[in-house]
Amino acid sequence: MLDVQQPAPTPSGIFHRLDADWAALCAEPAVQATVTDWLVADGLAEDVAAATDSWVRPLGPAQLLAALRRRDSHLTNELTDAILRALLRRAADDGGSATLAARIIVQAMIPAAVRMTRGQVRPFGGRHFDDIASMTVTALYEVACSGRIHTRPGRPAANLALDTLRHLCREVAADREDRGEDLTAAMSLAERGPGPAEMAEGRAIGRAATAAGLKPPNGTSEREASRARLELLELVLNAMDSGTLSPTDGRAIAWHYTTAPVTDAVAAARLGTTPGAWQRRRSRAVARLSASLLSPAA
Image (cartoon, rainbow, N blue to C red; front, side, top):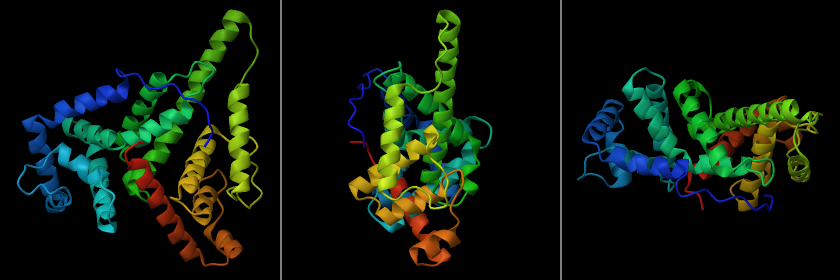
């Protein structure tokens, strides 16, 4: 949304290393056999083979990732949800299988992780792309291993992205606070909180969100919105700008995912619809936002 030049990732950065590690992982016969066993046990083998035209090849992590990245039909979205939920259940267990499941989830969510990283990088304050990228991947891996997301309503990819974003924002804020305390001890500086550039960016996001009708109509003040809230608003605004979400879809997400959510009854009354229809609209909007987060980064 904001036209701020971002430092480019270095070729040797963590996303490059993850891709190289992934290629080696896909070549391991034992890994391929494990993934095939998972798909057969979960009743997903035939669907993955059909989605990736893999009838004559053994199923493995490469085919699983290809199925997760496809975005060409409602049935494919249902398959993606089923695969992610199955992987999340396995990632919550102990042992090597859990590590492999979490690793596949991380690889599937790399496009979203790249976007989150770019959103946290700032031209001032020492927050470089590679530093934030490492924090993003760590947050994503920890969220994947938690195993709690698959029980929540909504598309699992959207839940993964939102929980990772919240985790990342907390880590970045803690890192900034630690640096500030170190500087205070060393240089007796008393300044706290975000710098001028970050405050200006937050105000710009807030103004754009207000103009787009994303501010909750229940009187909740967002003048001091958290970084996680600002990141969510920026994701929604970008999706609206690209045509992924309509203005009403954006409100359905922004009004619900906040510290004081607008109830479906209140939102429905304000928009002239029913609570059930409003809830279904929000679910569809989250699904479209999820699909855009999983699609390959430009």
